[in-house]
Image 1 (cartoon, rainbow, N blue to C red):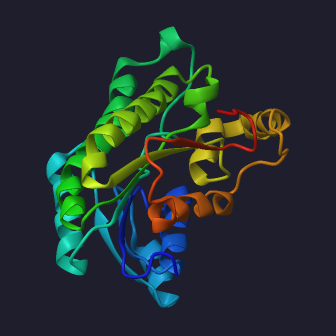
Image 2: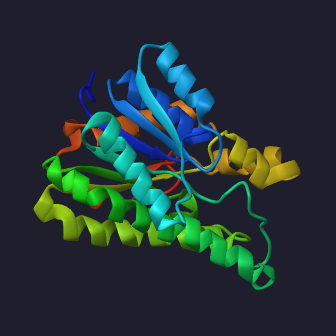
Image 3: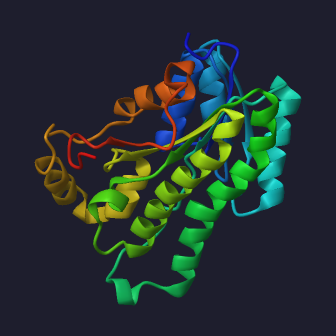
Length: 252
């Protein structure tokens, strides 16, 4: 139980990777705050039915008041915050296309959620992490940022910004013993991937797996061990890093 007596907040925890993170973190002993603009009830009920602790709440990461409410509710329910997993992102909800044909409003929305949203969640949670004597922030980036992803310039750019944000924040918060790391997966078999790839899904996933050293598409359970490691004290001297979980596509 690596995370016993620790409180972990997961944004975008209602489905897909976020839900997998929540369930795995609970299994490792954490009390979990499941925050999402979507419905969170199924995730919370699953965790509680397995003997875990979880609360769900509505979160819009583009709204600072909503982010602050998430942090305040965590403190009210559990008394402290030890880890924030910034998973919420626009992915399945966006349309790909040539760089000069992307809509201005989509570009702005992607940056607002995928970059500004992380900044705002950090602003809300860092004061409480300081009071806990330190902790961990885990930002979800993507293979799109490190390998390059054509026809999704807005998404790839936002995920590259997540890596820059992670490194700068790690240097700024080290004095508080707050670790900040990023995790960059390849395409994971989730609802969001299905929505983003659409009818090109099978061909795209085949191309992705063939470019890996480990030739299999990533599943949610392949991601959770890295998240638990970064949330726990096992990684207490790891900060500012981008950990690739991509089957050996990019080797940093």
